[in-house]
Structures are given as structure tokens and as C-alpha cells.
Image (cartoon, rainbow, N blue to C red; front, side, top):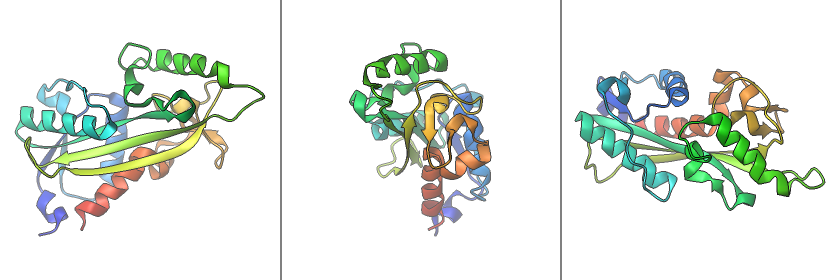
Length: 208
């Protein structure tokens, strides 16, 4: 039996209460063409898991297992963030709470700008990348989670640009497109973003 047949007609809990991520996943899953019903964990009264892993992979699996255990259903989780090599790969797994308060995009962006001031000499280009890891578990104790990842390379801007997206999108510059991630239409962003890349790999896996 193929993975696509395995998931056809099933229900899959999405282990996230982040509105930005939920909106992106709704668009991405619509492109999977699998007869699978996606249920955000918030609709089932499931709180966020304690993310105490040391990597994107660990945290994605933790969140997926938590949602599966609380719901009794298969679950998929995303752990993602911005990695800036010149800052020793910060904010990394702490991207959502970089400034202290979870999900405060404005504060997180401001802290990143402040932390990079010392490195912006002679208009130096600062590299960065968005990372997304998706983990899918068939049940809470699944011994073989499906894990895929996507990496989106870019640069970090010295100021905010654009009104679309969420998180660090207004600071993520794509030189080949001459725009920030926050200046892209959602559909176009999903074709090339870290989350879009991971979902494409997941689609290939589930269709195998």
C-alpha cells in the first residue's frame, strides 16, 4: 500500500496554534491533493507542547507526538526558524521567542536588528536562512516518524520591508528576486519557501 493510500480519508492533526503557520499550511495542503482532513490542534483544545529539544528535528517530533497523544490521531508538526550564521546560528530554535515573549514578531525583529548592528560595517551582506522541519507520526509512540526539511537561503535586511507574511519575513531579503519575503504573494512564497520545500518533500514521500 502506498503512503497516499494509507492517508486517504484519514484525519491529521496539525500541531500548531500559530495563525501565520496555519494560514500557510492551509494553502500548502490544498496542493497535496490527498483526501486527508487537516485539523488544527486548537480546534481540539490541545495546548502547545513544551519545546525542550535542542534542534528543529527534536522539537518537531516532540510537538507531533504531543498532538497525537492528546488527540488519539495521527499528527504533523512544523518546527522552523531563522538561522543567522554570524550570530552563531541564532535565533535558531528560539526564533519565536527570541526577544523573550513567544510570538511577538515586532520585538523579535527589533532584537535581531539590534544584535546585527555591530556586524553592519561597510554595508556588509549578512547571510541568513529559514529552516523548516516537518515531522509526521501515525500515533504518539510511532517508532519511525516521517521527517523532512526545507532550507531557504537569503540575506538579512537592515530595516523592515513588506507587509505580507509573518515572523522575520520583513527582514528576509531574496537578492535573486529583488524583494523581501514579506513582499511576496503567499502563493509565490509557498513555491520556494523553507516550508514549501519541506511540504514538497512530504508530498513526494506520501505519494511513494
